[in-house]
Structure formats: C-alpha cells, structure tokens
Length: 247
Image (cartoon, rainbow, N blue to C red; front, side, top):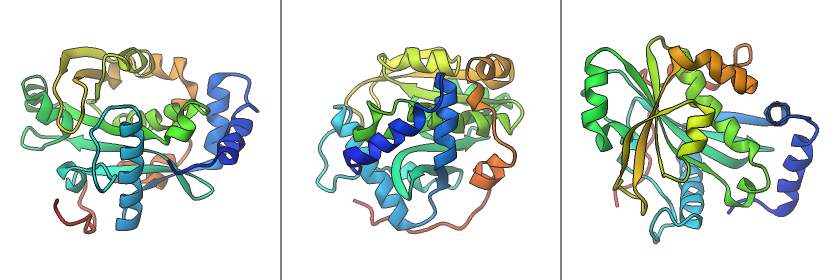
C-alpha cells in the first residue's frame, strides 16, 4: 500500500466539496492527473499497486516479487494508465484496443467464442482490465473507481462501433452493469492469474452512451482531455520500453 492516512484524508476532504457523487468525482478530477505509463519505473509501480490491491482482496496468490504483471503488459495495442495525486500513484487500469480477431487481450483470450466472432464482424473492443485502487484509498475515496471507469468509456467513445469488455467477479458485476450499462455475455470461469472466476460483460457504447452520461455526467470528457492523456493513441504504434526480464 502506497498511501498514508493524511493523503487519503486530503482526497476525502476535496471530494466532499461536491454535493452529489458526480460533483465529487469532478472535484477529484481537478486535483488528480491521468498518465499513460511509458517507462519502466512507472510500470513497476503499477505492477506493485496491482499486487497490493488484488492480494489484499484475496484475488491473486502470493508472489515473491510482490508485483502483478503478465504478457499482455507488452501488447503494442495496450496501455496502462496511472491516476496520480500530488505525483503519488493511487489507481490504475489497463486498456486494450482490439480491432481484429488475430489480436489478443485478456478478455479475448479468456472468452474467444464470444469475442472473436464480434471482431470478425467488424466490431472493435476496448478491453478494460487490471483495474485497481490503492487499498488504503478504495474504502475512504470510492469516487476513485468512477475516475478510472471514465477511461474505457472515453476511449471507446472516440472510436465508432466500439464496445467495452470487462471481466469481473460475480460480486463486482452489478457495479459494472449499473455504471457502464454492461450486459452479461458469459458466466464466470477460471481466469489466469486470479483466484476467483471472472465473467464477461459487454457495453455497447453506441447504444448506451446517452444513458451512461445521463447517469454519470462526470463521464463526459473534458475539452481536449482524450488527446492530452493519449487515449486516442492506444492501439497505434508507439515507442516501447523494456518492462522486465521474463520470470
């Protein structure tokens, strides 16, 4: 865990300036920043945060290096995005933009019979995976989850005909169905690197955009936000960095 209580209290105090949930999310948007991970030091910090969050929740097994990563972190059509407050990492999510059945992602690999036909028919996918919030913050600042789920929505909204996939536990499925208006496509099954089965949910952004924004007005992107973060460039060729030696 990377945060100390006074930092959590600062975020809580800032959020409570807003009267409604989405006012609170907008207040946190003013003091946090998104960053696409582009160097090894930042990547290692994200892997550590993932491990802290998933291990704390009992969702992954112990690892000697206390970092959670996989081969999909090296996919050229993926990006991990960090959320920082005063330069401190507090949450992260990994997004894959998948445009062809030959491309891989965690959801496509786990649920090929559901997703490869969609891709073959011309659909594009934003696979939202490895979502995590620092355990020291998640209970005290639940608005951080909304800050992170904005990202797959904005990324998909940039690309016509794009759907969002989320592989989730039965416990978390109602949250995704409520916030992103996802439909359950496949029931939970064993999932690599996780101790609990994950099911597949799918959001048709073209169909649900107005409903999502009406319920979650803070999901509407700010002017120039997507290119400033780099969400429009996920899936395009970009310089790579050496993540780490294979275990």
